[in-house]
Image (cartoon, rainbow, N blue to C red; front, side, top):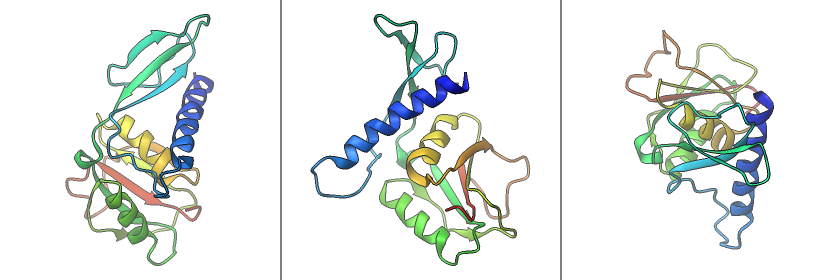
Length: 166
């Protein structure tokens, strides 16, 4: 199952990479108009949890899965700096805002952590994957939204906690 998810994500990374290399000279990876992500999974797996659209790939036992995601303007994101690098959360918040996300004021996390993580509320799992893979990168992983979120997270749909690897 994990291998299938990785294959699907590799396909997505390839598509986005081609978009970045497009000769539009903006140098910005814009995901504001993206409404779904399509990847290839194994014949028994699915990369999505919100009613993915599935179809069989001709000549293969693999299937194509389309994951529904929200427009970036409908995803409220709060960035926490757990990297120890001053200004890191503001930099990422500015980048997310430029890509259309509804950002909240960044904050410092009380402790540092080695890796970056994206934590989204139930129903935002696919948006978390998109944030971790294309926006935060640097090995960011996806975790469930914490039962006791950090102070100031308020009505955020997704939390981005930047680790020392960011």
